[in-house]
Amino acid sequence: MLKDFLKLSKDLKIRIGVNFLGLILSAIILPNMTIYNVQHFGLAVTGVLVGINAVITFAVGLYGGHYADIWGRRVTMLVGSVAVFGGYALIAIVNSPGLNLPWGTFAGFVIVSAGAAFHRPAEEAAMIDVSKREQRGFIYKMIYWLINVGLVIGSALGAWFFRDHFFGLSVATTAVAALSTAVIYIFIKESLSLRRRSTNTTGVWQVFRTYGAVVKDRKYLVFAAASIANTVIFMQLDTYYPAHLIESFHNTTIFGIEMYAQRMLSAALIINTAFIVLFMGAINRLTRRLSPNATIISGILVQGFSFSLSYLLHDFWPLAITAVILTVGEIMCVASTQVLRADLMASSGRVGAYSGFLAAMMPVAVIICGFMVSSSSTIGNVGVAIVLAFNTMFCAFAYIKSRKMLEKEQDK
Image (cartoon, rainbow, N blue to C red; front, side, top):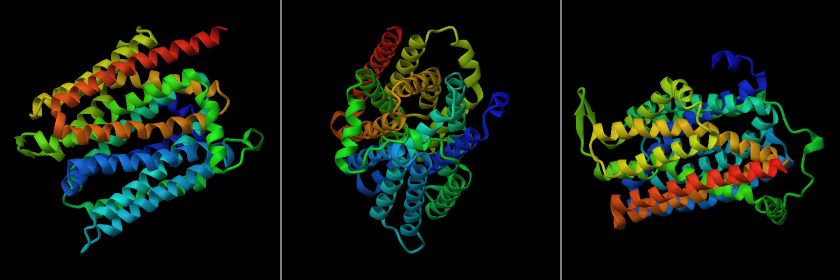
């Protein structure tokens, strides 16, 4: 993998590095925010707050994709990165010594989420701009591997410092966000030529006209629905899984270390990411003979059903074992779904708009996850597990449907 990485262009290496920094930031703060909100606001209010954040992120994501095709990738990424920096700075300020303002922390979290939503479509589009189709499978596997290295680092930092040293941790994340912004400003070059930029205006009506063309692409709509369902599965570690632990986990001592909800969450994240870092290559070799469709179906079902099972468990070792199993499913499907997404967007000729549309749809997944958190007080762990199981089956079906539609179109 290192040998192939060194063959990539300098611009691609820098972009992957920026992506890596952002992921470390996310892993430190975001998974623990659900626990933070549940502790300060309760389950019901936390679900509502998740929904509010999702609506704001949805709107900002639409503009991010639109402006990526008008302003260019670099400027759009810079604006989003500055917003992320500002959000983390606000979190640090409202949690400084002598202050403890949960609503201010939530506001900072919303700004961070909005900045990331504005930044993400341009980042995705730029990656496609500067890569060749035959490189993308490796690039997405490399990014996925680095994501998990970043998650190991971020999760470990979050586990040991979030509860007792939140202010210091928020100062550190603000510094890393500033570094990420500086790297984009100094090293990232614009990948969208003036000739290829959209001449559309920047008004609200024009934004919706831009996405009208995307909505007419039926195969991409099916793929977007699958991606929303897939995001619901991936976001379990950030949403209902922490809520389940804070409500149901049986505290214990493992190897002399006290394990409570937050540490169980970090342990699950570390198990997940360490397993990916160490065994991703071996699992990819074992599944290489499977067709893309079989790989996607198997991976989605294993991962989704493992999460469902985990909501019926309350102790360390059973939860640790399900964390390993769901990771195998995650490894199987992630690269195949990313390559399918890139192929669908590249065939459209409007990568920024397509990427922005998909990024804007992701808050729908957040709303679903928020509903699962809020409704859990009524339907319980069993109800949430059933909802997630149905979501998993729909996800696998929709991915295969979109792939078949693309292949049919290419055969014409």
